[in-house]
Length: 141
Image 1: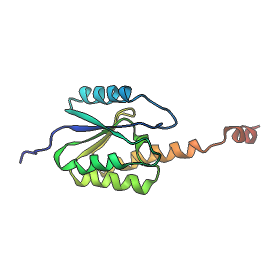
Image 2 (image 1 turned 135 degrees about the horizontal axis):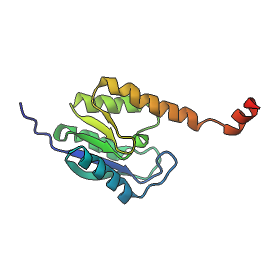
Image 3 (image 1 turned 135 degrees about the vertical axis):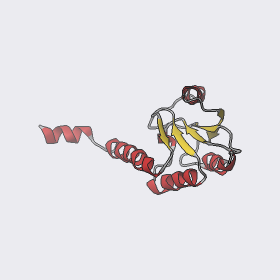
Image 4 (image 1 turned 90 degrees about the vertical axis):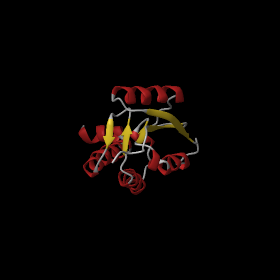
């Protein structure tokens, strides 16, 4: 049975990602190149609102999954900070028979086995982000 799904929707943000502000046109270039190298049909990106904690536009992209093959995030760090929210997103993508991609990290979530890898990276980064390097240096000396 042939699928009516066409292309991958890009998702960029207008706020800092992992404490870095990346211009939207650069985010689009990264996503477009990611798609081209993998021979994926790239659909125009949607841009998240700049309000902290807003994922309204991501929700709209997820609502579009019945007609597309998946979503290409600029970065996996554009996902919500809470693991439960991310797991809900992963579930929606997989349940729709789609895939989720992170262009900067070159990660693809295509099945259950990929969830642990994504979460390991995001949780480790969150833990390391809370590390007080001066305190560690004091412990070591």
